[in-house]
Image (tube, protein in one colour):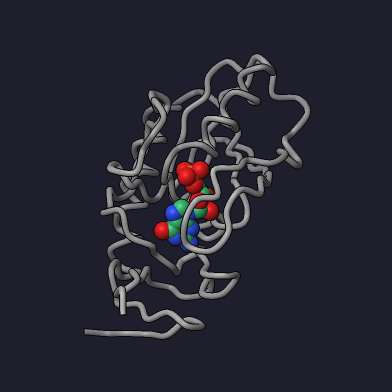
Length: 180
Ligand code: 5GP
């Protein structure tokens, strides 16, 4: 089993880049159908979503726009339960079809806050695309979660944009903590 070390933690291979890309290709195809004749605005939630959004957008061939925003809410390996401020949400989203792009939905706290803030600005529609979802960790109702890459167990993962204390975002595969 392919294992790596990031700081003090050991991780093992979980989702290979090829598997991730195959899934993303299908998500893009679905969006091309769902948003035909529309021009969605993708809003990536930084930092974790940057690789996912970059690869996803290459599979989307309808007209679309891309923006990024940030929310700080997480430290170490467990959710702090505290969401701070939204930074950089595009101004003019009234009447737009928004696709919020997340790396991972854990408890759903971050996303609940983001969706509430976005909906206050009267977009035409809001859907969420998340590469990963931990269904057993979800604490909030998530009816807008339209596109899920992979449902995963409630374990800490790193790689493909996701970090452990700032490290590991550059790994092309996704790894999970071994618990060692
Ligand atoms: P939530 O608010 O849904 O509990 O947490 C969402 C955020 O927590 C994600 O955007 C991500 O930054 C972080 N997060 C949750 N689970 C993991 C994980 O397994 N690995 C990493 N690297 N970050 C995670």
